[in-house]
Length: 434
Picture 1 (cartoon, helix red, strand yellow):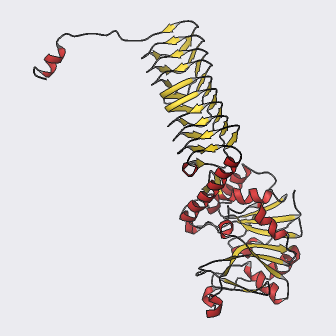
Picture 2 (picture 1 turned 45 degrees about the vertical axis):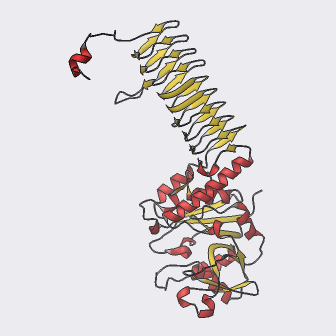
Picture 3 (picture 1 turned 90 degrees about the vertical axis):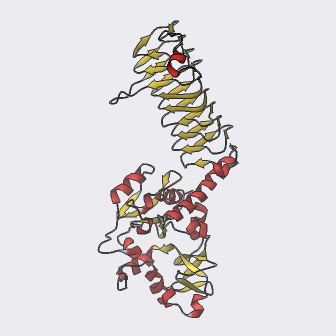
């Protein structure tokens, strides 16, 4: 159920600590940009999601519009009004309750956001209790009300002993923002407009500011590549637990790489070391150890071990064995046991692909199709030079190069150089005594 709540997601920063030319919120976690997860959680709660952008504005908007519709994007004038307070200037929320999230908090979940709604205070401020708060500003709380935020460099000895710090997510009544955002000043060392100054002004005017204690694991921002890796491990563990709870069997699950877009249906077994990427769908299938599946659909099939399905591959009732690579191909009722490359191919029911078979689909300029009908037996070490079309009920002898063209049904295709035997050659070449 959606709530009468406007959610503003701050996604305008450069993220210099990431040491990357890419905008911080576009760095990926489990196959999706980290900003995706903040928006996903917000959209589960409300129809009014406002994303504040600035750095790499067009790239950020384009990335999110791949997944979501009806988002509101607001461009921050970061040059003249930098900072979190500057980001809130010009925001026009639909509802009276306004939640401010950060786009670099990919681990936040719906249930945590809903806790802000249960508190009627003028401002609800998220706080975390840290065992070691060194380096953080302290939040002074008295009688269950926020009194002030003290930067560590300005804190007294008693204030430094406080373990409660600002988690950076706030819920405001709209009238609070209307009153205090225009009064923000950038008269500070950084020359920025800070949203925390709203807290100070509101407290001075006697408004009710309530602390909400939250879990660090969800509210900790991603500010470095190390943070990115740690967040991905947590997110992946959530994904694995979700699918195991839904009935997927995962062997040594901590070794399985799983992305957000992957879906399962029916009884599936995923062995150790498997990598599942993109918008992959696996239905009643067994993926064996150390296989890689990318943007593919697998139904009633087994894959691997050590197989690689590249994007746009479709398998149905098919066995693909070790060291088989499939790319942009459809295999239905096929056996490809080992050591083959099948690219840009369509292969029909009952066909067997021998070891070492290759579809030669690229001539250096263009890609071409290989079409193999039903009940075709392809012998080992066969090269199929596309474009090639083979009808049903055909046998291709081992070691054959099938050149481009169409081949009719019920034939043997054979291409071999006759064996030539030269008597005494070994002794002559290497000399006696070898």
